[in-house]
Image (cartoon, rainbow, N blue to C red; front, top):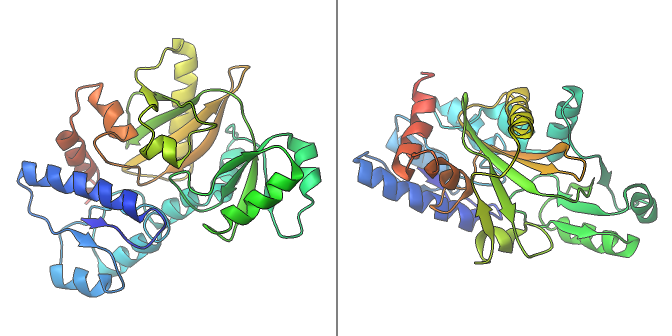
Length: 295
């Protein structure tokens, strides 16, 4: 069990890892929990595991780095491979590939120190400032003035050297879990905060996760097809989660794909899985089985 690490998402990774470890214990699976540090290669050689269950979130955990290391060591691992992990972690590259495949995703621009902040606001009106590589909504903000854009650009740079401004889409946010060919029920995310930020995801008790969603079957079919296409276009395998926005006209837009989604008991994917009778232990078994079937 790989967990922790040194990314800004370390604490969430430890929570996911702890929840999965508890399930493995209940299932009677022999495992070792490894808080990933600089000695990870030596520890893995010492343990010589049959498989690595990856619960590392963020940089060096779901961006292809740990995946490449595991492949060099000859250790099978859960989740997407090196290329798919790297592409999904990079919001710009994933969006460019989705565009090339004809999939809806919000327009965006990369920000630099010399960006004409006013022109970005003139072009988009309201934008979402995001670190290009990162998760858990860390470093994300919504702005509609040039001064605020410049300020939040500097804030986002604390999480990643590359920062983007994405066109703001007003409407509901949905999230759908995928594991191989199977889609879990889509959930609707609601918060009284400005957007679904870190506090809304992990702290605010007023956050609402609605599942199943109240949506016409035709619209749900379009959303699910978009999710499948996003997953397939990046070449993902195993567990992932796709986040989608819907605008006032009913069109869906891809936000991002997470190749190592949160796995606490109240995280999105376990919550959705429970709605179709898949408890936490069964979900953990399916994550392992998705990799073992490919061996």
